[in-house]
Length: 456
Image 1 (cartoon, rainbow, N blue to C red):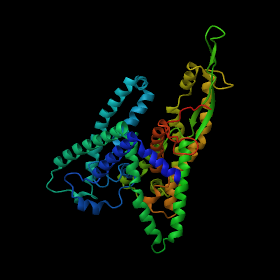
Image 2: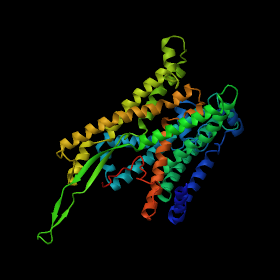
Image 3: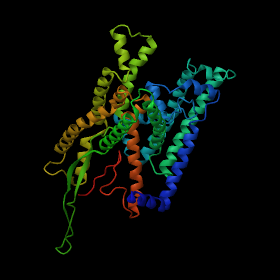
């Protein structure tokens, strides 16, 4: 505790870091206030009575990322989801289209890709905003619409406001990245996800202390399991396999007196156990949302094997849902890792930098060795990621309330843990640059995307 208090004092004593943290908190406050401002043409009183606990399925994922703004029909209802969709599309385009891949390798090209991503975000936002208008006109929210607003006026104003809201949230994220503590978009997503945590804990505590809920002991056991899940997710996020790396020695100078040996340092290549991040879970969730959508559109009943099976796939507590979910997560982990990880390019970079793996010839043998190691460590990473993905369903099956169960793993906690680690790493970097001790007694905090080789 003494070291923790001392670390907080060190953080506050650094003027630049203090200003960045306060600036970030101020923009987060603006974002959270905007999440409670209702769209024009909607009666917020009736909306609160109709919205209930929020949507499920794919819309529930949208609502979680938007911090509940989706179910409140807020001006930030779409949050940064259109920007995420556009970013994923551009990332996949960089893998498939050589011209985009070339742009992503250059500084000016990356700025061009970012500009294209912004333009694509506007298009995606307009499409999603139009779909959101149709959602608000459904039977669940129809009574909340103000009759004086015509259909076209409501559609036009909603699309304009939601598009402006998404672009404003993007601007907030970019300002946090530039003048705050970094990772602006990720921080806004994390804040939206974790904003539901206090209310979920209170609901779980109330449920367990009501009649037949199990009492305080069961609640404390759930909290202990929740903490253990967080520790496991931290290990999954930070886990790396270190491949030893040597640099070739060079002789500098022509005379005996001037000769100097350079190089020979030993580093390592850190291969992440979970290099695909949260993307496999998102892809698997998107696939499993399809059966529920088909059932809803076709009015399929539970009578018969087909209808019962299709509905079980949309039930997070069913066996078939969790089994197929786990298989999809493992498959998408290998698929996405193969897309973003290029051992041949890594081997070529090592060769150009006069570095090599001890006992392995440069070139193709190095690429094959790295690919083999990556395949081996991807399997346990994929299995652990699949377990993290199905934990919320298992928690719900064991009696945990639906709101609190979502924090036992899955997309929410993986994003939350990863962003918190990245943010702590940014703060630690400021401390170390000013010759303060880091935030840990031994080692350094590693985020999701930064795992630079460290000299041994």
